[in-house]
Image (cartoon, rainbow, N blue to C red; front, side, top):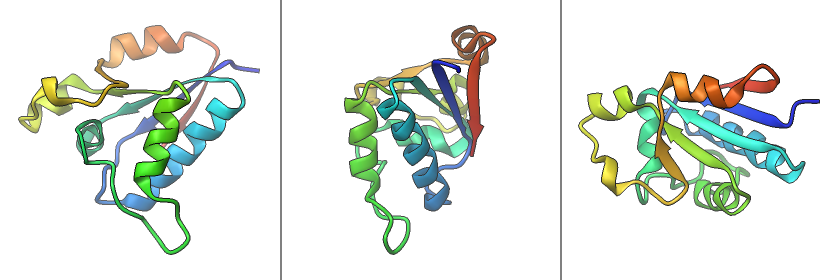
Length: 120
């Protein structure tokens, strides 16, 4: 069984339910002792900025702030696509603590050949 989980998140808060599901899957994997990276692309890169992972997606859904905190406290890493960050004119220096800028090559180097991948 793969010890690493990669969650590709290409949707930001324009679809908060999708973001919620991605973080639920990621935190569940952390709870199982997996190494987890969420690789954020497109507008999902905004989630790496302070205060952006906020709100509740649906009735009965957990708050994104809580999911994001559980993900960070569990050792999860949020990697932001550098091209997507640049295309949106975002300041790379303002990212939250468990966030780093990492492109496709470092992402695939980390993933290797035995990683479970989810895409949202």
